[in-house]
Amino acid sequence: MKLSPLIHQFFDQYLPHIRGVSHQTVKAYRDAFRLFLPFAASFYSIKVKSLRVEHISTELIIAFLEDLQNKRKNLVKTRNQRLAALKSFAKMIRFMYPEQQEVADTIRNIPQKRSQKALIGFLYQDEMLQIFQAVDLRRKEGFRDYALLHLLYDSGARASEITTLNLDYFDPKKKTLAILGKGNRFRLIKLEPKTCQLLQLYIRKYRNSPRPPYQDRLFINQRGEELTRHGIYRICRKYLEKVLPPKRLNNINPVHSFRHSRAVDMLYKGHPITDIKNHLGHDNIQSTTVYLHLDLDRRRHIQRRFIRHMQSILTDDSKIEQLLQWENEGDLMAWLDSL
Image (cartoon, rainbow, N blue to C red; front, side, top):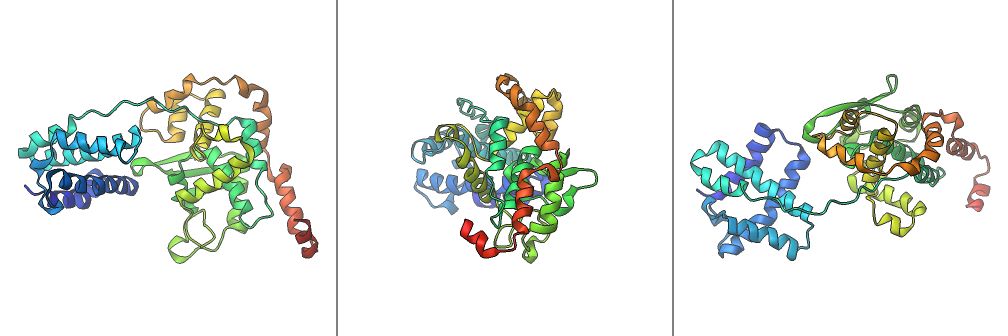
């Protein structure tokens, strides 16, 4: 049986219609096969279009995974993600072509490689306050960044989830936000008063005019398009670099650190682990229990100050007062001279 039509069936029918996976998953699996197919063709010294299901063997897949690590310098996590794509393909083969069960089982029985778990790089609340204060609200995109950073922390959302937020996902009256997460599943979370007011002000006054395809998106970049994952990463990196020393930056992910920080904060406040799981949109409770092993002692002396910041209204925020003072400045040239 030729491999080519099965690949088309996998991406055209199985993943979107039978499994109903997200677009991000489809793209990740596509990238895996864009690497695997040329490697398999080279392994057997044939063309990609000549590959058959029978060519898929344990030797081939192990060689492919080792090549990812040794030549492409992929991390173990990436190696396992590529293997997950192949295993999903094997599930389709077993489901739709029972006569090829032996090949499917060969793929599915290949174990993932164990790796050392990365440290959970969360931000302490005094660091979070410094990051908020590092935003220059006099810059054109300053208020958007200020609102975005608050939302990243308050929601604990992934960067990919922030990029797909639509205007109607945010309900300012109920102070809730609907987030489309992994597996195309929505979750509804409650936002702090400060975050709600920042979002309302951003939407009303500081949101860039979107181009037609992006009119519904919440966060818009300078080109009038939706803010991308890489754009969010650059924004977070920019402000973290202003506040944190280089050694500290090496241990955290600029975007995901906000998510970890939110989980740790909820844990410290006494929220049940199931509430944290639902807030973050974890698939299983085991992904959430890693936070139970963290040392939270340092947070005690700044907890109250941070809670006051997140629950305050805009008139009590010195950054907003600074913005309003700048907007009311009559002498533009004098302001330019002060920069």
